[in-house]
Length: 426
Image 1: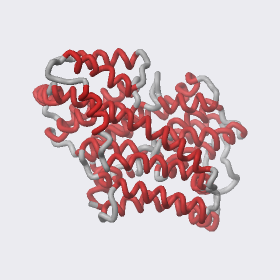
Image 2: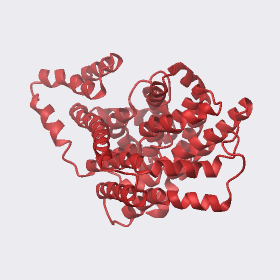
Image 3: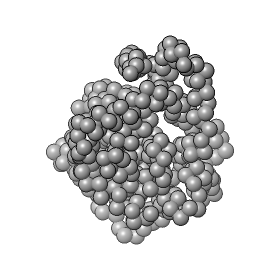
Image 4: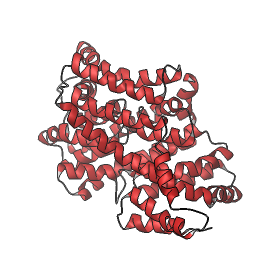
């Protein structure tokens, strides 16, 4: 078994080479040295991996999220979050948590959520006396809720890689997302009580006000449920659903809220293109790396080794959690999902693990990796946007990281929390 590409891959990672180029560079020498293979395979795999209708869902979902940030949907969700929880201890911190949950049903991107809330919500938190490190930490921590609640780009990628029904995988994210919301609100309350952070509003919103802001945000809230139901009843595929999300967002932004202008379309296309290109480039490069893994029969050998070591699925799930949490400290979460999900999914099936359950466990693992030192992506997005030291964000993140891992353990060993909604719908 030739492990040279694996060695080169990790060397490239630790040298800071971008993930996509690391994947290609790691297999280049392998294809050159093997007399039975041709370097042209690299180009063939790079191109052929893009020829998938399922993958078209990713740019549509990313574009829909970008449109919503300009359409007025996001600002109305913030008003809704404030009406629901602004009266609680640590009001704006609680709004931050709930807003990320609501944004999960809109953007599907934790990075976009973190960047947006840094610009809109954190300055207001700072004005109200919240410590800037704490404000940044809440923003980074709650951003992990966004890629768990549908529509989630990470879950769409997982469904594509493991050939699972996209709607079923997406539906599994509701309860884990809500669990994260609850535990993070408890952490915000505990810290706010100690530091005397006040509510953002003097009294609880009236029922009339809650109904009013909920109706304003209803256009956004219809999206995730409409997507899941459309997928369930076969009205459209995931790709068609993504296209409909873009069209829906355009109509709502231009004709309902009337905040989306033609001049915004250039910025929307730029944001969506850059975000999509980074994900697709990694996907294409991972296809080449997957070819090497298959040629060397590494997945089959790894599966045989793990099964010979232990046939207990709970031990396997614990090992996967530990591995992904460690990798999350160093690797981009999308890269981890793309490289390792096809590797471990057959083993999970052989041990009797439901693949929808397994996908949510992996998705939460890589989301937690985005707030884990030393290279947590969301922490770096927050610190660079707010122009504060990353160390101060990581320090304040520790309680949020702890409760997130508790939720991870809970959904790992109580699969019903993930499978109950998909099983009801499907």
